[in-house]
Structures are given as C-alpha cells and as structure tokens.
Image 1: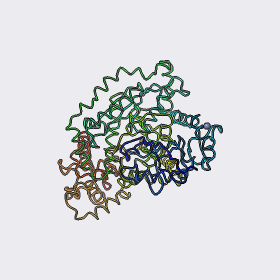
Image 2: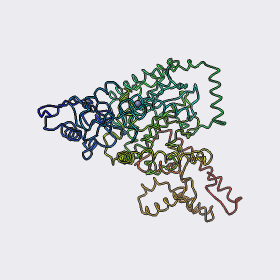
Image 3: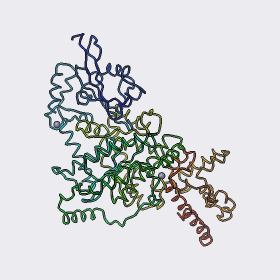
Image 4: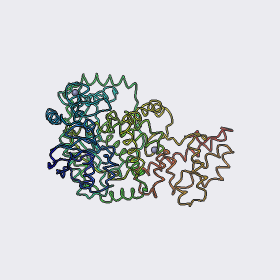
Length: 103
Length: 513
Ligand SMILES: [Zn+2]
Ligand SMILES: [Zn+2]
C-alpha cells in the first residue's frame, strides 16, 4: 500500500444529522496519509475531532455511530460492507442519515 | 444501479469488500444494496418493489379508504410523511399497478412559533414546503399552528355518523364509483382551482403577533419537554381534524412509521396512556367519529423509509422540532426512542416485536372504545380511563397521592383532580346527601372561578396539565368546552342527588356518567 496516498472522501449528512455540523450537508474531506488504509472506525474519530461542531454524543457514541443514524458507503448499506472495519478507498462516498425524530 | 455495481467491482480484492458483493435475496442476481433485516438483503430494484407493494397492500387489505374519497395527508416535511406523499403520488400515477383511487389533499402545520423562529425563517420554511407540495398538483393547506386558537369548541366532540356494515359500504362505494365516473376522472388535479384560494387564506403574514405570543405563553407554562411534546401533539391533532372537517375530507392520513409507533407504544405506557395504546398505534383510529385517521406507513421501519428516500431521491424538508438537538434524557419520548434504537442495534427484531405486541392490544380495546363509556377525554378524545370503579388502580393511585400530599400548599392543591374523587368515594358508602353537603367545599359545584379541568381528562392528559404552572393560556375552544362539560356534569350531579331518595340504598355518582 502506498503510504503517501491521501484519501479523498465525500461525507454527506442528512435527516437532521447536518445540524451538528453547522447545517452543512456536504463535506469534501482529505484524510491525512497514514501507513495503513483508513477504516470507518478511524474516520469516525477523525470526524469527531475535526468536523463535529457541537454535542458529539448526538453523533458518535463510544466508537460507533449513534444508534438511529444510518450509514451508507458508496450508496450501499454499511452493514453489507463490514461497518466499522470497512477500509476506505480513495473517492469513497459516505452518507450519514439520522432516522431519529427531530434529527 | 449499474454504477453501484461497478464501484463494488473495484473493491473485490480487499478482504472486507467480499461481503459487499452479496447478492440480493430476492432476485438472486443483482448486488444487494441494503440489509432489510438480518438475513434479508435486497438490491435497489427489489427494495423499491417491496416498498411500493407494501403501501398498496396496506391500503388494499384494510379497505378503509373508499374510491373517490377525499383524503387529507398530514405531511410534516419529514422523511416518513414525505415517503407517504411520494407513495400516494406514485399510486395515483397512470402506470401504477394497483392504482389508488382516492382524492388526496395535503396539510402542513408550521410549528416554528414554538421554536422561537423569526417570521422570515418561518416564511422561508413554508415557501419550501409550498414548492414541494405544488409539484404534486394536489390541493394543499399550509397552516400555522396559531390557527389552533381559532378552533371552535365543537372540534372536541367526536361526530358520530350512522354507519352500517363497513365492508358492505365499501362495496357500495366501489360500485357507485365505477358507475358514476370513469377511473381517469379521479385525477387529483381537478381540485386545482381550490388551491389558490386556500393558500391565500392561510397566508402566514396574516398570523397576528398576539396569537404567536399566546401560544408561546402557553408553552412557557409547561415545565417539562415531555408535557410540551404531549400538548403539542394534542393541539396539532385538533387542528388536523378540524382542517379535514372544514375542507371536506373524511380521512386523515398520518405518516407514523413502525419505529415511531414502537417508540410511541412504550412511551405511552410510561406516560400512563394505557387507554390510548390501541388507537394510537393501530392502522385505523376512529376516535374522532366522522374523520378517521389512518397510518399507512406503520409497516415500515425508519431505516426503510430513510433509505428509500435517499435511493429514490424523494424530496423532503428537514424541519427542526422540539426534540431537535436535545439529549437522550430530555423527555420520556426521547428517552424511549433512544432505548428502542439502541436495543435495535443488538436485537434487530426489537421494533417489530414491540409493534406486534401493540397489534395484539388493538382489537379488544378498539371495539370496547366504540361501544362502551361515552365519556371522552377533553384533550386526546380517548375514552376516559378515570371513570372507573373504586377498586381500580387509578383510584388507588389517587388515594395514595392524596395521602402523600397532605400539607401541600393550596396553590398546588387547586390543580389536583380531587374534587370528584374526594367527595365521590365516601359519598358512595355513607349516606350521600348529608355527607356531600358537609364536604361541599370539595365538590365540583363549588364555584365558577376554579375550573375543574382535570376531571374531564384521562389519566395521562392529567399528567400533562399537572406539568403546567398555569392553564390560563390554554386555547379558548378548550376552556369553553371544559366549562360546558363542567356545567353539564354539575346539572347531572344535582339531578342525581335528587334521584337518590328514589333509589334507596345504592346511590352512586358514577351512575350519572
Ligand atoms: Zn434484487
Ligand atoms: Zn387524554
């Protein structure tokens, strides 16, 4: 694996989840390079540290997404993709949709 | 769909990606795009088919909506009700397989006043909603919550229609429909002429600022988020039913999904809303009489709906609510939701189990509702669960509450539903008349100035009122109706005292209810 590669990821937030990100729905993100590929678990930590604007507990709980928030990777349910262990590829598209009442 | 497949192909080498190439359980050809429930993964195409079929099947199976009937869709802008609107649109479309044949209209209630939104912000939201509704071509009504202040007291009385066998009348309606109008005349666009008039009538600019303030005053008197949500739900429902009546609709379609209903069922139990469990979660809610509320989305989970909307670009508008950005523990409803969705992660059948339990409750209590007990709660219009015998759990709760409240301030005491019960229970056993006179202070005919609101409410709505520091800002239609009902029960009470002499040794106040 090329250690120098950067991962460009498009994150989209819907269903009210965007409210915790200043109301911004689309986030074009370039992840810093690291020796091994980024996985979803690491991405969540990174989002919590770099993108989340308020109330992190309403988005991340423990090292997982808050129950009630759906995740799609390249338009497919992340339950089909290994969830937290999924290894991100360059140009991946990750969507978070809150199904909770009121976001 | 092809695009998605191609993207997966690139992932084949990586170890975790192997699961991504899982085939659809239904067609067994295309790559699965979502996990519906454990062991059931579907591709986009099969998912759409499954979703659409479920909607038509739900309406077809229940046979509650007649062909040609005017149905008002309550759309909040959220994903669930927008998916419902989308399904109705598709179902009425020319190439629909099992075509829907009713005449839809849409209603949106703007609650921005309770979130402290500015007039500009509210108008922006309403404009967004308006353009969303316009695309459907259906008649639509955009109504600010303030309109609830203009409702007539009659909205709190269920309107009873002389109904015969529902199955028979459904068949009649179908026959009538087939004879009188060719199918294509049910085009929803025929009502378009009404549209401009209606939207003008509900122009948000016409909301008097005083009304906004009254509503804000009312909600500022409610101490807990739990009670706020409950009160808002009550007022919203009154406004929906009233709108349906004045605009000539006979059905009200609500977008509550299965996850939402499972949460509601558990929250209802926590809130003491036992009497409402069945009608609140069943497909059909007959409590308003002439306007029947139906919930065609009740078989869908929140996940199914959100994924469907995302995959098929169903437009929806995210509208913040009282619950937005609140913590899990901010209200009973919110806490229950968090409990259910958390449980759902580890036990994926949680929602369906709760929901199926709810279905079992349904049959028995719904029929009971219609046949027995004419007294209805002033707020939620369910059968009063407080008009029970002395040995009921409710009476026991009241007695222990009274005992534990000995020595509370008169301010607090005046808010308690003590009037009927304090006097009612002992009067039953001892010689009624004298005792009642001695206790005249606690009787409901004490005087006009202190409104005996709580005796008109079910147990749960009483809890909501107890969480209010003052009821003076409750809308006029509620207060007028409460006064009317109090007067009526007062007269009944006086007559019953009069009748005691004839009745000998079993005088009962409950007999007059
Ligand atoms: Zn398939
Ligand atoms: Zn009630």
